[in-house]
Length: 247
Image 1 (cartoon, rainbow, N blue to C red):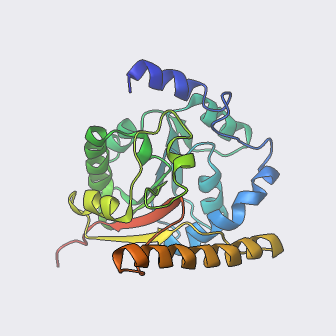
Image 2 (tube, rainbow, N blue to C red):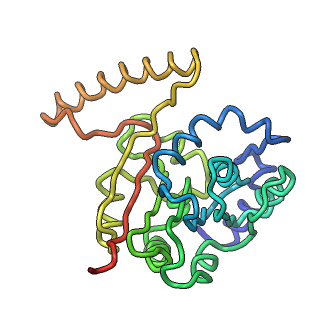
């Protein structure tokens, strides 16, 4: 994708309907159960951990991380409209800028965690290597990279992969592990992006998804002989760990 097209699309990311920031913080309510679970399950246990979210959008995850007690969390996004929306919501420490430049500005080993929620799919294969290397350099030994991407293994992934002209790629658990393990990360844990039960409606969705997952596993087993290990949600979540410091 040309730089000119990218600039045009990112400049109108909110006004063209690709992002939907709420008018007030109360409007974040539908997203809170999912984001709270993500933070509680995958952020470092130390509430003083240094966390940078790249491609943070209008700052919803940064806001939730602070709500959960993380004081040293900040975000950066290339879309000026998204950053303006964060500022309108009163979410501070959200900078407008290039993701790679923001990572390069960090001293080596300065961060305990980096979050890239719906970011990697916006990069071409050749562009991914500088991004992955920049994250690896910025992370402290034992630090983690939390990644959320479209899942090419899902039969429903097309709506995500092709729903945004700035998307270049989708991933599977295998291809994402391949990229991260080949780039110096020691361990990559992959999770499905299933509904988070928090009320009657979401509990019903979770039960229905469990049945759908089982049916898809049967289909996969019929073709390949393998029923376990598959991730069928249209997005997947991964946590990659940088090796700890040598003893």
